[in-house]
Amino acid sequence: MTEVTAAAPVNPVRLHRTLSLWNLIIMGIVIIQPTAPMPVYGIVNNRGHGHVVSAVLVAMIAMLFTAISYGRMARVYPSAGSAFTYVGQEMHASLGYVVGWAMVMDYLLNPLICTAFCAKAAMNILPGVSYYVWILIFAAFFTGANLRSIRTSARMNEGLCIAMLLVVSLFLGRVIQALWHVHHAAGFFARPFYEPGSFHPNLLFAGTSVAVLTYMGFDGISTLSEETENPQRNILLATVLVCVIIGILSAMEVYAAELIWGSKPFPSGQVESAFALIARQAGGPVLFHIINLTLLVATMGSGMGTQLAASRLLYGMGRGDALPKSFFGVIEPKHRIPRNNILVVGLFAFAGAATLEFFAQAMGGGAYEIGAQALNFGAFIAFMGVNAASFVHYWVHGKSRRPSHLLVPALGFLICGFIWLHLSRAALVLGTVWMVAGILYGAVRTRGFRSELVNFDIPA
Image 1 (cartoon, rainbow, N blue to C red):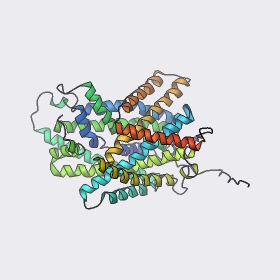
Image 2: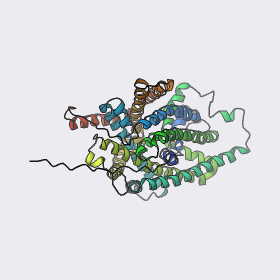
Image 3: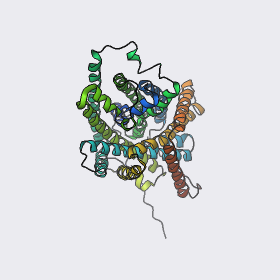
Image 4: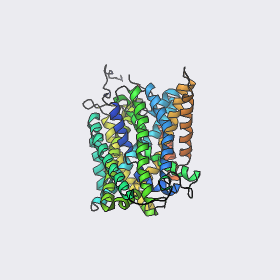
């Protein structure tokens, strides 16, 4: 039988470069959320015996090293594959595949936990509607928004960002008003940074290991390289600026919260709603409900943004044959988006949120909690991989070596490795199962790794 092969198009459809530096910054802020420290506030406070501000700032410094490595590698490889491409090109194709597979876990779990969180938050407003109905509604909404052009997604993100910043400003204003006419003891305004009676370095680092979730998602900016104007410049600037902006804004939020609440622990059943409780103490029931609604809206924005980034990662891996190219490596010509990938991520978010909730109820937890624990496993493998790739490119193979080409990726790698080793048991177990499945898939696809696993296609 004669095999017929279709001729490759002379000008294949590519992603469209329409995103400016400002678009990237706004999308990065929305992916991470201007309200990012609010959901984890109670956990960080309890683990660090207060000192949430210090934990958030230490986490910012830690993430900045990795953010710089991401930006530097985007200059070399302006590809939608992000860490998958960086590691595969600089180190080894198989290592790139392993990092990419770990990233898929991270990027698929992010829309999933956003879907689950939004469903739970919506049930507080309309408790008569089932959780499973809500996850279908939110998964469909995220998918529908991302099936439009990238420019449409950017405009929606700008509106969400403005709304969230207004609510944060309202909260800060109410805190100032609550504290304005009250006499405070000496050192009161410094206690959120350092309280002598409860400070210990181990406790601070325990809080920091959770506070780092405040910045999770900044790497999604690099997956938009092929849709960015001048990616060699703008990806680095956007990645670093987003980390700094989120860090400063988050520090302001948790500083105000600690002034109201102090360092006393939250009861176990109220940890997830800790920030809303502080809002009630500062501004009454109205502010309590505003913060609740804002966290719902913020997570909707994050859900759209993380689904957008996940679809671009899958496209980069599909185009490189790490995933079936005929499905994952295809661009829909009208809107110039990876439509198949967007639909897959949306379906996974719905099915995953439903499945995790079913099992979590039997174990006394929740889909959001389990998904959030597992998310960091893949994220920090990718972070370590990008730092290693930056070290190899700029220090090992670089012609003009600078001290920062060694120190930045080395510190980024070590910090991320330290955090990764201290993940929860559940995250390590789920992550290991995922990685074993990926390696088995790679072995089957390459007939025991006897053929090339990945072909990298780096656009101009």
